[in-house]
Structures are given as structure tokens and as C-alpha cells.
Length: 458
Image (cartoon, rainbow, N blue to C red; front, top):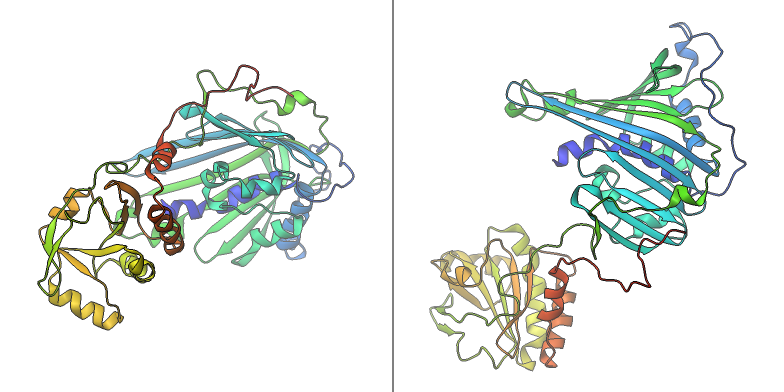
């Protein structure tokens, strides 16, 4: 999946170039897009005179500078092999007006998102899941990258949280990694209304991806079509990719670089059956032990000394870290966990690094080489992990003085030490943390007073 996401970077950069048109400083409105160039088609003899990179920069100027802009986008991806055929089509209409009005309307396709900003509020909606979220609109479209639930960016995936803020930035992002380019002359591209539009055909080469773009000839050099060549990716994908054919094409039509919008163009209307939620995607379910009594266990450490959790539960704050020497994220997390544990040891914190089924000698060798001294609890038969519902490691949890599991961290994050420090301090002060975490995992529609409609029209 990560490989496929990387392949569509260019396409979504171009789509977000339209969005970027609402970010930079206002320029004088351009005229509506003209149909086709009146100049004669370029021939092979003209090719050396055309610089593809320069033409791409002119296209970036065209889509980033206007005060307002609109177009419709259709993307088609096909994957075919002897055993599998799949075709996905996505259609989107886009309307932008500086400084912060936006309407990206999903018109069809799996997991597409509708995003609407009327300048005051920002709506994000997943029609297929019948859910949407509401929040304050950013002051400009660059603020989308800072929105916690700006899932349009992650669903468009490849672009991540980067939105070009100028034509210069857009051109730079498109040309990054390009090792070669070629002008292939002029060609007619048929739009969705069956009209032909004369375009310049450019090809760009990168280490792992080649792509073609057709830019309208004439006074309005807007992008009309983009295709991706998957050959290099498939060649390096191994035997599983043999016989697989993939194609990805995007067409952009109905361009208007001086539209006259009204308030209704930036009004959000929830799809039938859609409801407002706290998060655009359903939250991860809470750990089954969160807020429940912590299981007790008895085992030994790497020196054979007895460990019994029963007399400690309900009296001490306990930190358990499930890990193994062969687990890379566990090895990353352990120094942070150990540092925090040592910091609070004198305040009564009890810490055990519960090892997943390894021999004591293996663990001792690892700790010696890593220059770490941590209290290890052996879980030779995996019974302790079973008690604590451990499905993946590292899993780090905290038990409060009430004997209940108050915090569960699954996996490693760079700020784990800081989080544990704050949470242990709260638990030592007698605070309860599980309820707030359980609330985050609830997935119920937002209930608003009748006087406070979340989808009020401007």
C-alpha cells in the first residue's frame, strides 16, 4: 500500500495545486479559460526549442495566482492480472476563493472526502461512512495542513501535510527527483464534453516513476491530463507483481480562473443519513483492560528471584512494559521507559519489564551490551501477556493505586517518556485517567442543542 501511495504523489500535488490557488497573495483575476491554442501544432523539429521544466513552471503560475478558481477532476486507477481485476473511479469538483473559502466536493469513488470552508467553519465529510466533523475554518488554506482531522490530505495520502503555498513551491515539488524530461509535441485531448483541447505533451523521468502531463496550449496553460507509468515500480516488486498491469490517469476539466461565486457555492449539506462525529474516522477501540482491575501474576526475574504483583496492586503505582530483545520498537522504547521508572522509584513507583518468552541468558547479554539495568519479569509461557491482552509489543501500561489499569500505550512514539512522566505524576497525585481515555474511544454522534446547528448555511 505504501508503494502504491507513493505512485500517486504527482497526481494529488496537481490537484492540491488548485487548492494552493487560494493561499498566495491575491493577483488580478485571469480571464476564463480559452478553448484551444490557435498556433499550429508543434512538430518534432520544434521539440528542442521547448523546455518542459519552463512549461511546467508556467502551469504552476496559472493555477496558483488567480483570486478564485474552479475545475472538475476525474481519476481512474486500474489494476489487472490473471487473477485480479479492479477499477476505481473518483470524481471531484473543486472551488476556491481567497483567502479561505473552499469546496472540494466528492462526486463518486471509494473513501472520497468532501471538504467545505465558508470562511468561518470547516466541514469534512466521508460520505461512504456517513460521518462528518465541524471546526473553525483556517485563516487561509495553508491552515488545512494544521487541522487535526484534515484527513483529505492523508486520504489523498501521497501529498501528506504539504500544500504548495506559491507557484514556485508547486513547481519545485513537481520537479523534485526529476532526472530527465522530454517534449513530445502537441496533441488533442478530448474532454468530458467530447470537445478536443490542444495540449503540450511533456514526459518527466524519475528514479522510480515516470509520468506524462498534458498542459493546455495557448494563453491559459492549465493541466488537462496526467498519467503515471508504473513499470519501474512493478519491476522492483518481485515475483508477486509478474503479469500485473497498472494504470493511473487523471483528467481535469471545466477550468475557470475567474469564477463568480456566491455563498451557496461554499455551503455544506450533509449527505442523507450522515451525522456529525468528534473525529472523521472511527476511533480505535479502547484496550479491553482499560479502567478494569489489573490482573495479578507471580513469576521470577532473570536471576531467579520471585516476583509477586498481588501485594502491590491497589497500593502502588505500577509500570509494566511488555518487550523482547528482538523487537526493534521495544529496544527504542526501553531507555525512555527505564529513565522514567528510575525518576519515580523513590516516590514509590514499581516497574517491571515483562519479557516475551526469552531465556534469561539472552536477556542478560542484551542488557549488558545495551548498558541497561532494568528489573525484568520473565513471561516464559506467555501467560502474563495473555492476562494483559497483549497482541503486539511494545505495550506499556500503568496501574493506579486503585488497582485499575489507567493507561495503555501500544507501540513506540518519540514522546513516550514525556507522556509517561505526566501520567505517573497524575496517578501519584491520586488522579483517575482511564475515564478520559475511554471517552476518546467512544464513537457516538455529536448532540447539539437545536439552537446550535452544526451545518448552518452562511
